[in-house]
Amino acid sequence: MNELKTGGAQGYLRIATEEAFITADVLNAYKRLIAAGVDDPGFVSLWGFYAGSPSARATSIVERLQDLDERRIGDMDAAGIDKAIIALTAPGTHVFAADEARGLTVDANDRLAAACGRHPARFVGMTAIAPQDAAWSAKEIERGHALGFKAVILNGHVRGEYTDAQKYWPIFEAAEALNTPVYLHPQGPSKGLIGPLLERGLDGAVFGFGVDTGLHLLRLIVMGLFDRFPKLKFIVGHGGEALPYWAYRLDYMHAAGLRSGRYYFLKPLALPISGYFKRNIYVTFSGMAWEPAIQFCKSTLGADRIMYAMDYPYQYQPEEVAARDAMAMPLEDKKAFFQGNAERVFGL
Ligand code: MN
Image (cartoon, rainbow, N blue to C red; front, side, top):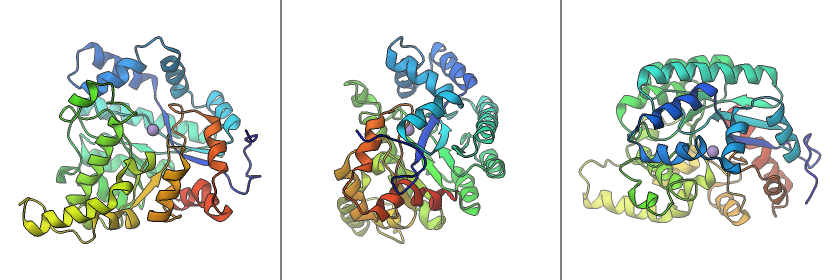
């Protein structure tokens, strides 16, 4: 394995764009929610494991999630990561009642802002929101922007509801107005979707996260979010949650459905579905250290739309950084992948 160092000797800095943290208060609130018997099987599967399992994987990840100082920076140094763009981990505060969610969200944003202040060369923050209260979240996005955060984290569905309803528009209006991207991150699939996935242990990052998040983004697209907010930037991880691979069939069948009038509620869009991936959406490769998938997205979406991410601490694998350094790609494109696109899209 190549020796991984920070500082850019390989011709680019490495910026990891989907890195996670948690506060002790959010972690304790997750435990309380599970103990109270919350009816959210995706959340219970995810945090019942991480907050409850004595396994080495769970304990090491929960410890690392809570560190915003030396341990995290030590891990970044060991993996050659120059800068981490950090967000409150999934499902953020989306699982709580609005009152509790607002308080936990403010505290998480304050703690992340303080950590970015302690380590300004290494950490960049994303603003957490409580989409249960969209008007309040729009104000929190403005506050986060003033604190120096460079994106908004949307941790998937909101207690089973996807954010394509108009009541969520204030969030997207604020993000577009500030030219700050919205990072749509997975969480456990919604209660309506999870059944057959959970039955076979496929609800988590193994597959269910991608199913739920890809569906969420598609719902936003077909309901015209990016026609209403044409300058809104979205970022989606894990190689685009499989949607780039589906682009041809999505375009063909969505247009066929519109022509035939099969769904009365579907309205024509300004672009084919794939068009939004070339105008509004950026794709990161968190947890997807696989060159064929990266090269496919580079060739179909463009070298200016793909970004590096590690998915720390859930997938902390320094050898995956080395594998991506070794990709067969011109240095200019590799620099865009690891550094330049993140600097441009997040406005670093
Ligand atoms: Mn992640």
